[in-house]
Image 1 (cartoon, one colour):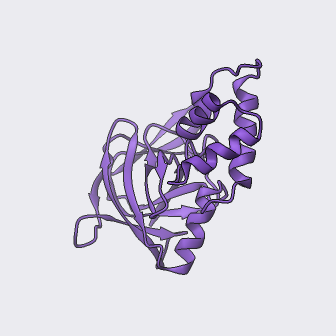
Image 2 (tube, helix red, strand yellow):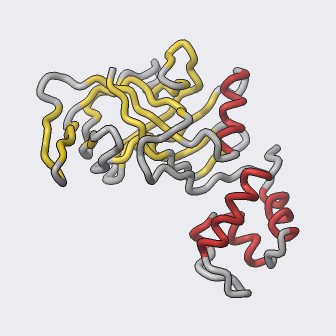
Length: 211
């Protein structure tokens, strides 16, 4: 089974173990020199209710949940439900929210004729045009240099805003950061740039005691 590790782009993660994001990104050359083309997942090994399995590090003996899925222009979008009643899944989810576990990897088979090799920038990359998806996994490292968690949210949003206020952010800034993440603040009242704000929020995200 082939594997491609892609950015984990979590749009929202809730305390009940649900999250949305992209398990794979199309038209993107990863560090393994693979490119998944739009619509490449022509077949999917699903559960009885038509969802794709979530695993830990491609170990199908350590399943973590399941997800609905669809392919758009950007990639394979998933709406996942982690099984938090299982100890190792609950631990993994806490690491996801803390920004420690920040990679997703798809596991798939390529049928005969489903891929070709192409020269790009004096190197060869594998173009994957057709694949059968088996699962996607939570993994600690992403092969994509752009692998970042965009936004993580929890129901205790007011607690998060209070923590931000304690760091010196205004009420308006705290609400914007808590609801929209890094991109929500192009500038700050005291003139701090967005890069500085991103660094400060990243530090807070790792230090915050998620409930």
